Image 1 (cartoon, rainbow, N blue to C red):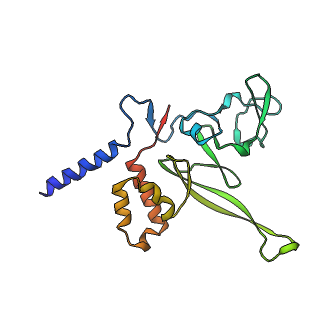
Image 2: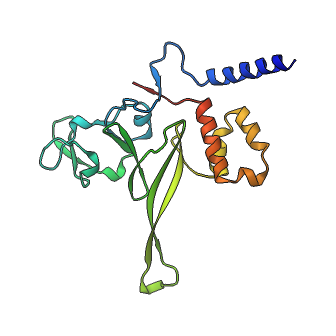
Image 3: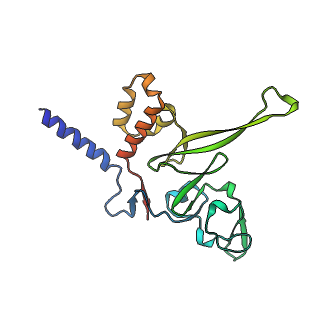
Length: 212
């Protein structure tokens, strides 16, 4: 009886995993470290997920017309030729992100931050600066910078708080994980470590795929 139950469990697990994989004739490839992302600028999250930069890196130049070799050191001065061949300056603050030397960076906080952990639920940290008027009123304000972190849902593109409430809408798509999460005591669910644990479990059960 015990053997039969184990077989049933593994069969259900395999089925759940199979539902997340692309069809056999798909052009998608499962993400692994070192995945060959195409380099360039992403105007949108969709461009990133399609592995299709809106402007490829080899079309980008400096204000002096030289090819850009490192997007992180451009000081915001990036140009590209439009459909007529005229050079236009890009507003980097309006980008979703970019890929440079095989690493993906997204717009967050004070600038662009590397996706530290890539998966169907990804994770990144970044610096964010805030202005606090507090009790200073007309005499001015103070600014302070803090390190923050977010989950990135690779299905919707949403940045989510690293909390139980932040990750729950994603893991709720998986009935097995939702049941396991709901079964935890409230105090345990609200621990940050639990959010990371279920991030890893979700990523194990739902691999991330990109076009090559």
